[in-house]
Amino acid sequence: MKFSTKEDIEAPIGDVFDMLCDFETFERAAMRRGSEVQRADTKTVPGVGMSWNAVFSLRGKRRQVEIEMISFDKPDEMVFECRSQGLMTLLNIELVALSKNRTRLMLSFDIKPLNLSARLLVQSLKLAKTSLTKKFKLGVAEFAKTLEERHKRV
Image (cartoon, rainbow, N blue to C red):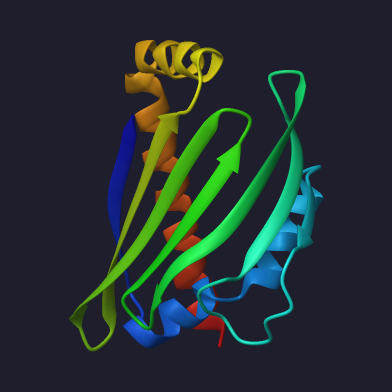
């Protein structure tokens, strides 16, 4: 099951990519929302092999996820593989320079079940795909807006 969207950001591609590489800010944001996030690697610069372990609550259950960066192509693309109980998810973040000060952010999220219970979960998500897609697109639009505002402040 795949979700994808794109948003345009009023900022140069290099600046947008650098903001997306500020992983400590994302870790703190997740922790403020009640998640436990811990780096699982010792890399000092962003790149392939970076990984995190996260624990969060979803639908009343505690979920664990392992996240690993599997592709890093500065300033164009980052791909993350997320593994959880029975699910494998690929998160693809792609940037395209539209002009000197305008960047298109393309984000896709592909969920693949690995066992029967995960297959049932994905099947139930498919029933709500329209509303989930709308929420996903709104969330990415808000995220793009915050990146744009962060760029203006600098």
